Length: 306
Image 1: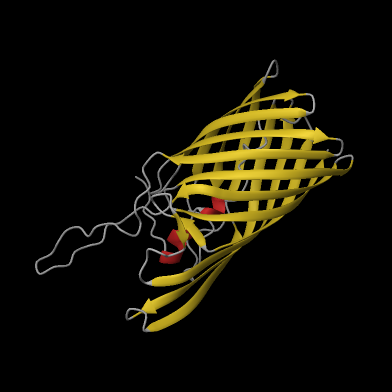
Image 2: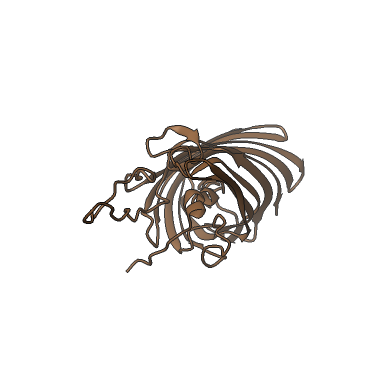
């Protein structure tokens, strides 16, 4: 039986953004590390937004469809550690762990707006630990690999202060099929995956593609990530009242808030400082979706390879 999890109002609005703005463990493509080799990146990111996509994929202000709130905003400051280690030549251990400081603000309206109360709720802590194994199946003429792993919550249940949660609080599993090829200074890769979600959230189908080119010490890359929920994301504001009672009234539907579609665009620019040391600038934008925040995260990172 799936565990039932009830999130506070603010948390339900932002529960999946923590996953949307963290590079997936399959983002590096099908290439594996040789035995004993490693890739380690630590990056600092910042996002501030006042927009979201509703269930019709229309971009609007946060809480625009909720008559009880206005002037909503969301901020995410994070440090993300991402690493790969070659266990054997065809098998690589991959993992990522974010440290996040989240802040959600809004103005509550009472009596049709006669009374306005501004509130801000914050949460700081570790997000989901993503750990997986990438196995190379084919090296020529293209690189083919499979990758499977788990997302493990580090933070327990929802925050006591009703701030935005650092994740769904469940153990999720995912698997990917990855394909790529290097053509001199150019590389391209693509992937498809499936995420099995625990709790009340529905499963997701994951798609991605990436291309990049080297110019001396510079590397420019562009990545596209898409998430499609296996269920149609609901209208989280306009759900009808069910179970009418004598004299009027009823019970609001117990909606599963967190099911989303999303499309992310992620350009990056990397500069090699010296052998085994690089700096990287990334821009990650949620450009379309349903029931998800709209915004752009800027990040700068340091990469060490051995």
